[in-house]
Length: 196
Image 1 (cartoon, rainbow, N blue to C red):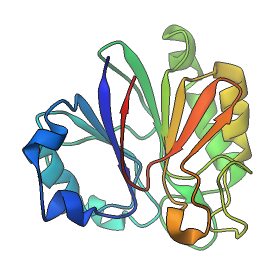
Image 2: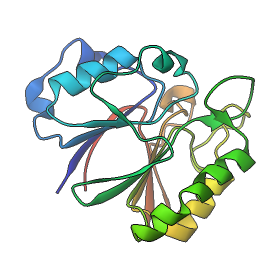
Image 3: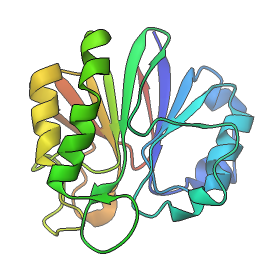
Image 4: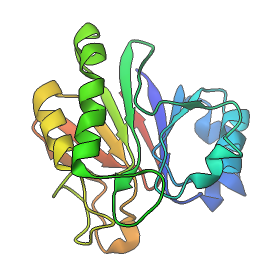
């Protein structure tokens, strides 16, 4: 079993201000789905003896000048960790000018560039995104809309999990976990611990 700490969008005061090492001593890997302060990621990777992989959220512009120390960006990559195939596709649906925002076509192109790696690794176990999946836990507004190509990605490659952020659970949609076929889709808002 591998224990994951999945985080996104809101720094947890419980973790940052009242860190309890015993609560996180068994964590094998930390995965950030975006929109968290660089200092928070650096804090986590220094306090928890585990690697931290991250993708960008639509507000992560400060990472360019001050990237999180000791952490690995997995944007547009497929990496292996303890036998788990993990792929990163950060950013949100384009709703205004700015970094880390994509049209449906642009996100589809990013996925197609990873086809060879997906083929070579015989698929993917975990897809890490910032934006949600279209019509599965996403929002009604353009900013919080999910990507249709994520539905296609799940249908084609059947990952075990898709972790995302962006859609805060306090936006009126308090469902953290959804399923599409055999893929469990988990909203990482705040933090979530999972064993796989």
